[in-house]
Length: 373
Image (cartoon, rainbow, N blue to C red):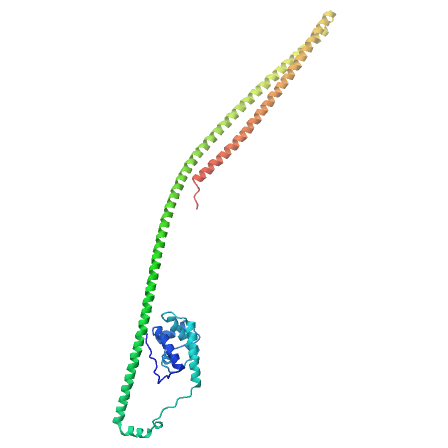
């Protein structure tokens, strides 16, 4: 950082141009006297429309030449953004543009200053001749002017130093105040962060404890479910075995019932055959009685007895046959019903066995899931 001195009033007399230079020097001071190269780099980096080299910036600050606003505005904005305390770039640009317009108008309307000549001053010719004829006096006069100029420059430097010191003190106080405010804000933010971290740690510990309790409960439930699955699997196997045993028992019983029914039907068939034989014998006796014709009464009596016997035997035979047929039909129907019932029960048992087997398979898959590739 390098400070550029404000040009004196002889170089830039009081007026709009000097006011513009004073405002620019004030901005340069508030920004911390950044160098011209840095300002030029910032203008290029921020892609402003105008440009300003470091040589042109130093020339501008010395009051040599008058810039265009398109090149002056980026300088104003870069210095404003760097100023402490912070300033509004738009407000400063508007303020300095008004000063620039006034200075530009003064530059256009002001007549050119004539060069001073010793001949135009009173007694100019005598002074010139004296200056030419008396070098010692001229040297003394120049020395006196140099001393006066040095004294004036010392006074201006002292005033500038006092102003700089005062401005530096104000800036230091402002910086200290800002530092104190930032420190207080940082401490408050750190305290808030500590409190937030403590709250988050407490909440995390509480969540971890709750998760541990839930995990332990879930583990116990899984152990209990596993034991229940094992018991259910054992019970299902027992039910399947009992169903198979019951199916085998019903099958054996059905076979026995069918055998008994078959034997009873065979007995009925034998009885019917025997009754049929008796009827046949009675018919033979009747035929023999009709064949003998020695004694008519005896024959009639025999024939009547035989007819009566035949009729009774026939009636009895028909009754026995009907009863036997009815009994055989009843036994057959009962056998069919029992067989149908046994078949239905066997079908139900098979369905129950299949369902139980599906449950057992599902339990086995849940207990031992297949491995994924």
